[in-house]
Length: 117
Image (tube, rainbow, N blue to C red; front, side, top):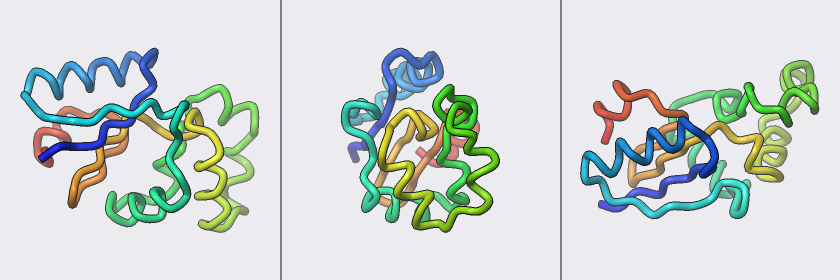
């Protein structure tokens, strides 16, 4: 099985995740999260598959998140508005993302990845 791997190449966590995938011999198709950010349709599929709340898909440590004061805005937004916002800029999305047939992994946590991949 080949996974979809969304990353930002300059992100050190993404680099660690990529190295981990390669060491495990896991096939993936790489996608630059900023040049080709997730669409709202993709997010509408991935979020329920991940089992995580939409908030977990936001890159809360990112500069853009802080500049836009999303910590204060998100609680008043609808799920639809959050998904639309995420689809506007890959820098808002937590990375890396690994998408498989029945899994969606957000961020890189080795223990979690080892259980699921």
